[in-house]
Image (cartoon, rainbow over all chains, first blue to last red; front, side, top):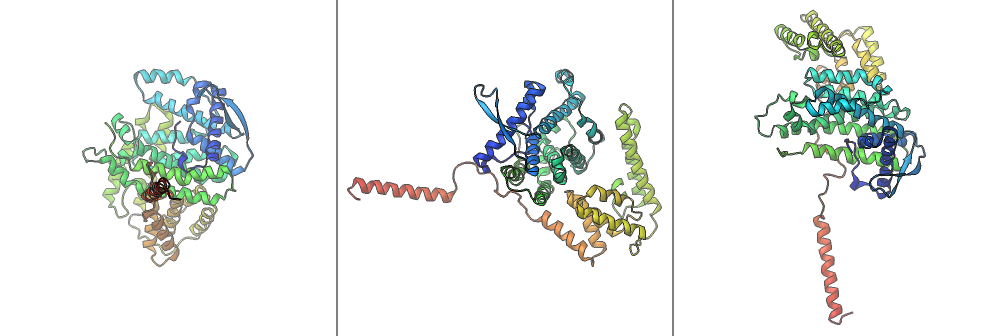
Length: 278
Length: 199
């Protein structure tokens, strides 16, 4: 599972955790049915969160079903059956498509051949059309080495917002989703500082702080400096959440868990990351 | 809503030379010929160049003019009013589009409203710069002051958004430990009592 919008499992009730699992098993099964079993690997926390949020906002009564899962093979799992699951599937798929595009562009050698092979599995859906202006701009920012991380994060936020808006229930939460998109971009860039500097990939924070690898603890310093902007963003997300006034449900508890425990927890974990193994 | 100083990346009291240098630097950086291979990227580069040109022209045209912040044209006043309504309604993109149309972009109100949008959209540096500028330009304006202070309050306090604090690394807290060892001691003494013939 990939993604940053994770719940903090320690803070969940058992019934909440079960529902959460039923949601992502639902998306996973759907992916496997539509795009073949390997597509199960594309499942992400982020898409699961958006589906849960969408059901929380609409207050729909979902139904449960059973599905067989390869892990472990002889046990049937509970899954949620909800209209919005399709959306979760599609964005999971779409994100992986973008990843493939990226790979095809940047990679050399073996990975490049692999990406050409994967390229044929892309689905050409409406997402691609809606998102083109944003993905283009993000690519442009990468090529022209944009030095302000917030500018690129803004593009990513708008991009997430546009995608989420294709699900009518999520329209109400569009500002919050914009802010979450920004947060995901920034936290991902901060998480990948070491990796990007080794592979010489574009990372806005490295451009902003000027590739000053001679300074001892260069990465620690960047993360220290960026603490306030990230905390400010998390605060804004929580403030926007309060405005939504979602009626009580297990889904709401899950959404709250992600926003009040998951996001701050992951921010702290990444910002306090010390030396990585070389 | 772009601030011409920001587009060129120069400070508000930059000299003409500094502005020119920054302009040349940017034109070089975004030269469309660099993006020849990709028509989409080339179009974006051209857009960027246009933005830089406009900002440069604006700054040169207004360089010697004293920034007269006292009167606002009726038209601008109107736009500010509408932008405020949009911000209140949560339509930040709509408000941004309106603010681009303002002709006098050195007005504190313009900075204040732009700063407010940045605040709501979670821009840390920009929100601070803009709100601070508006507050310093009009220290007597209570609204500017309040919003700026609000920003400082939520961004400066050593705010820890985690309600639960950092993740516990297993084991038990000292208090629980002390409590349990006390229980264990009592249980032991209890066993002793039984063995020794107590009740």
